[in-house]
Image (cartoon, rainbow, N blue to C red; front, side, top):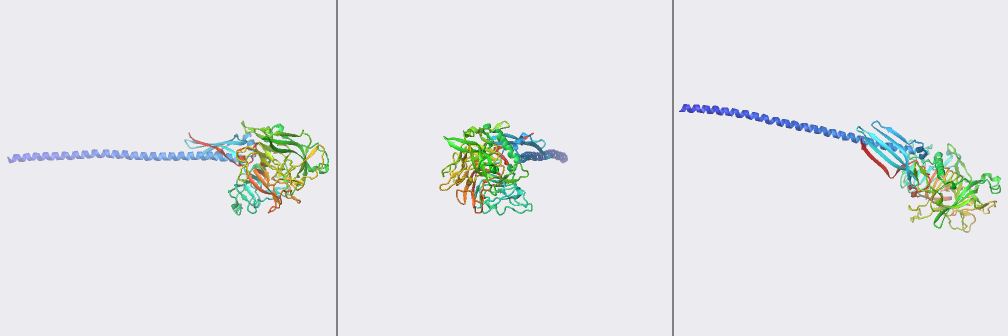
Length: 589
């Protein structure tokens, strides 16, 4: 019994052993089968992370490359725009340059390129508008940036080639003309670079005049040695001063001539005049002993009747010239380099009798539209005179008669324009004390002379004019109660855009030994509501304090910036985008 029992135990033990061994192997197999999938999963996850990181890095690099290409394309396009603007600023006459086809170019930056073009693109009122198209390309795949900008020439309130006046025949003889204490200059100012030696500031100031708007200088603020030329006057420029600005083209006689020729070609034949006095009797004051003291001119008188603006035109007037003052200089025609000479000033004039030389017409009868490149400007009046012009009329009272302009008109003279009266535009004016034409006022006058534009000295008028056969003495200005002789009213007001290609704007005979005939003593007040563009400064007063002449009060007529003035007279070398005139877009190729 016992033995058998032991055997059974042995078997059970072996069975237990066998069972125990089998369970251990199975556990090892199960463990091995579980780890392998985990490893595979880990490898897959790791590979996914690596691939993801690689793709993230790739896309980041791709975005960086694309961003670089986009930026390069944008900068290339804008560089083309800037190059086009620079090209425009260098042209003597931009419309002529465009007609000649010199209006496109390209730039290769290595990793990017651009191409640009400049074309005429219409009128803003009567002001030319130009379109610059610049395309920048960069990258593989390439990105293209297109820039389309409509630009117009800057309008400056008072631009001058030089803040000096000649005292002799050459530029080297010019002397400073100062902005003086008490003067109010409420207009932007631009002064061309003088390239003088020694290098001094190109603006001349005494005391503390008031500059209420920006001032632009063609020169740098500092000398080549680093000295600050403007430190002592910086506080006077209430709206700031900028340097290194493009020159105004008023000193470029070719540019001025192109403008005048284009104006003449677009003016109605009826309103083109060439005054002459070939039939003038050789008797005093026009006798042979005074042959250099006579000239011819057209007289213009502006007035309003029945709500209609008129201009009375008298052709073939005979002007008795007078001796000039020390500062009455203009440019010698065709001189290169620029040289000057003293010219005989306006004294008084006679008009021819009869009606053959006189006509009175509504200003609207002179209206034309300029056409260029298939575009047509807004209409405006144009009168062209191949010679001198006198603006003024007679009044035998002490009241200010004024020349009143109702309409839009520009007068161009190849000679001088002499002003012998106040000139104002009809319509609404501001009530803020400056009495400027309001922005909604549609009336405007432009005066352009290839000679000078000057206020005459009314004291030259004779008290007992000589009788001249076929002619009648024509006084201008006003009579002052209790005094003999003629005067310009105080204050004298000129509301016009003045462009002077042969010298400067100012008053004649201010520095004469006898003194200019003034309404008040020692000076009157001169208001200019408009703009001035002149080759050199023309003086309006002398002395500090003023001993003779006018105290200046100049105000920019902001309407001129919108292209209200008829005729293409814009001579600035600076261009800027027109309102809402900038368009750009980007293309990925």
